[in-house]
Length: 478
Image (cartoon, rainbow, N blue to C red):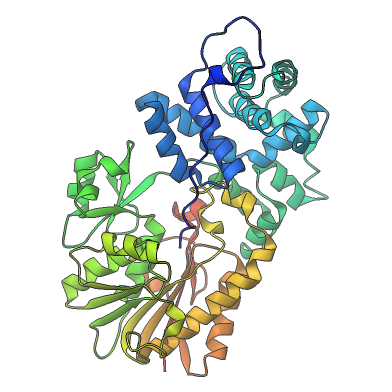
């Protein structure tokens, strides 16, 4: 499940309206850096989501091609590396970064990112950031100049060597600062990976890389090779429907516009196809997606259902997200219900023991998609887990009521946190009051996929599979 839509940033006035700086006029701030600042500021000021606000800002600024790519790199790179950048800025400024005025702070973050993670010449990174600070935080330009010049005295490895605790005595603290993830997330990843610090580091590094856009060629509507040729991309490594988009806006792809394809991480495709392809005895015409918004998996399952003479019921509790599901499944054998999936048995539209295959793509922390939603790593807290895991257990319990005897339930999360995966699915199965067998999910994924573990559940990883960290458990009701 994806996070809910964020708010649009409150756009500030023109640079000339800000006043307070009576120095001689300087060249206007370049638009890519300005756009990146607006996006980063919106994320921190308005709790916005970068993937929602940045396209709006780029469009309003009239940025395309290289300028748009540079603004995007600055925005997402700054957000991914925020924890490390803040530690460096605090040291360089001689004060906690929280004590720096927010507009100047966000501009300094973007400047430090340029100095430490891009090929922008140091003098250009410093001067452009000072100009940006002068336009958003009058009076702080001299301070910004001094701080950034201090940042420029070391490269990123030098700063990590100075600020990170020794890995021998504090491995979690070291990895947290070196690779810019909160310590609780580093600890959770390490535990799921069996305490392997080397593999944990590889995962954190991959989380900080810019992920490719994955398209899903909807079966029966467009061939993946045809789609790959049309966009100049390549077929996916594992999903039979995946295509890697080499660049450009996916919304400009003709097949996406007309509904023959959609944007969907390859891992999300694999878990949906795993449910659809799992062997099943008896009838197989009634499928259910219990948490369908915003509609990616429902679109893929609906296309598969159309080929197999089945029909999908897609349930989404939020009305605006239910509308997105309706848009995503237009023309497919899909019925969309705007209701709570936990109401199975309490509403005649969701009868008990009725469905042959049920998908529970449960709301979760989203720790498996931090490379795509970098701001999430700084917003999520351990305190988020108890209410989420309770909801996950309730939804999985509802799915087990909805499925017929002998039918299949797939429990999916975009999180590798053990509490949201193994603990939730085991506890929900125990509390369900019905006989449940775990189906080995590994044969449901393409042959030759590495690193699928010992089963019966499967955990995908960005550093192993190039996908989001999707978890899949398949259960058969007795």
